[in-house]
Picture 1 (tube, rainbow, N blue to C red):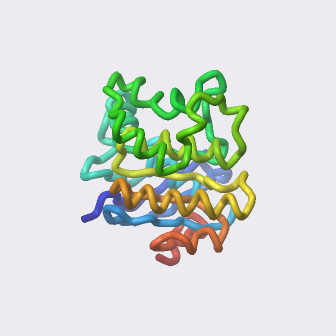
Picture 2 (spheres, one colour):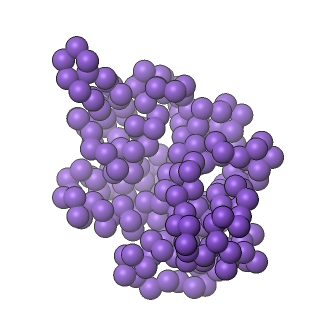
Length: 222
C-alpha cells in the first residue's frame, strides 16, 4: 500500500534569470513500512524534497499525498494539525527544548495537540531507544547520540504514519551513527512506521530498504 506519493513536484525560488529550480518534476512513491534513503550532493534538491513531503513548504507545482490526503489542498491551520498528527520529524540539529527534560521533550508534540499521552506506547519507544535512565536529564546533560535518540523518540511517540529524517546522523561519529540508524530501522518496523531519510552519505544510505538518488532536482535512480 502506498502511503506517500508525489506527482510532478516542482519548486522554483525567485523568478526570471535568477530563478532557482530546486525540484524539476519529482514523482516518488513510498510503500507503507518502507525505510527509504534519499541521497544526493549538496544543492541536489533533497532537503527541499523533504520539506515538501512534510508539508513544511508549498510546491510551485505538483501534489504530495500522505495516507491519501493531498497536503496542499489543506488550509494552513488544517495542514499544521495534519502534520503534527501524521508526520514525525528528526532533524540534524535535534531541536530539543533546552529547559525541558528528556521525557517532557518526547511528549511535547502530543501535549501541544491536546491529546492524551499513551504512556504504555511511549514507554515502549523509550525502552527501545535505551533512554529509560535519562528521562529526567536536560538536553545539555546528554551526548550527541543520546540527544538524537530523544529526537527519534519524540518523532515516534505521537504514532505518525511517516517519519522524515533530515541528515539524522550528520553531527554524530561513525559508530554512534550506525547505532542510531539501527535503532531507527528497528523501531520503525516494530511500531509500523514508514521512514524517509535524507543523507549525502552513501554508506549510511545502504542501511535503508531502498535508495532514491536525486540530482539537479530530478530523481535519477530508485
